[in-house]
Amino acid sequence: MDILIVQGDGIGPEITGATLTVVAALQEKYGLDLRLEHADCGLASLRRHGITVRDEDIERARRADGVVLGPMSAREYPAVEKGGVNVPATFRTRLDLYANIRPSYVRPGLKSFVSDMDLVIVRENLEDFYVDRNMYRGPGEFMPTPELVIAMGKITATGSRRIARVACEIARRRPRKKLTIVHKNPVLKMYHTLFLDEAKKVAGEFPELQVEDLMVDAVTALLIRTPGRFDVILTTNMFGDILSDEAAELSGSLGLAASLNRGDRGAVANAGHGSAPDIAGQDAANPASLMLSTAMLFEHLGETRKEPRMASAAAAFIRAVDRMLGSAATRTRDLGGKLGTKAFGEAVARAVRDDRA
Image (spheres, rainbow, N blue to C red):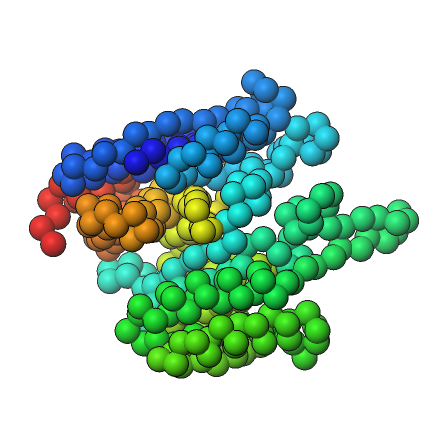
């Protein structure tokens, strides 16, 4: 399988390097036939080519079986007309990666802000109020006067149905088989009612599921008070972005936020956090998010390509990361441990080699 590696900006090269240390251990142990290619996107590409992501990069991603995408320093980019293109958004739109899958759970031995959480947030990835990706041509916001900005959201029946199907398929494979649809339709009456109605129609095709719908403000509180009530959460782009970060932090740290962007033909593993330029080059970044995202990519490829070795490698990857996070001696310093970025990668690689499950 061909995997395209884009290490990104800021801490991206460090956490990507640590992740690839573990990938090498997995290749050796499970006999994975992975061909790793590399592409420069972000600030490196801007310096070399005058643009943060080129058409050639997207075509290489399209040909690859999967992509590992490091964090990007989008806030440091110039205007779009000067080459500052949003890299993750471009990958998502050009590859039609309409589903963003974000699991969060409490790990034994690691301090968290809640005691009972094991959920997956399924976020629609291309519509809603994300104005840099929700229009066919041009941005979805404009400024008619110096004191007025108008931003347009977009929800389609087709987009709602296909993300609902992804959420239902995930929910039916989990033991609890529960789906919570999150919206704000009393305020956005037509907008979110369309999303809710289409999601319920799809959920009706899965009679084994327990289905409920809740407003987003209630869910933000319930994630803190009773997170154990949730299993699979289905929601729109912006709500999913916010709720998934909240869930990751409650589970222990935003640095644990695994994230897979997937469509019908492509998949991109992308750390669920930013590029943290303030700690770049200090061996201080926690690579767990990108590691767990890469494990999700391997799991997805194992399932869709009917490759059991990839599925086994993915499970071992997750076990090794969680095992290292569970001990202060082997977790990173941001979580009260002793290890830097590189040492954590080496520790997870050793755990992969020692894994007997």
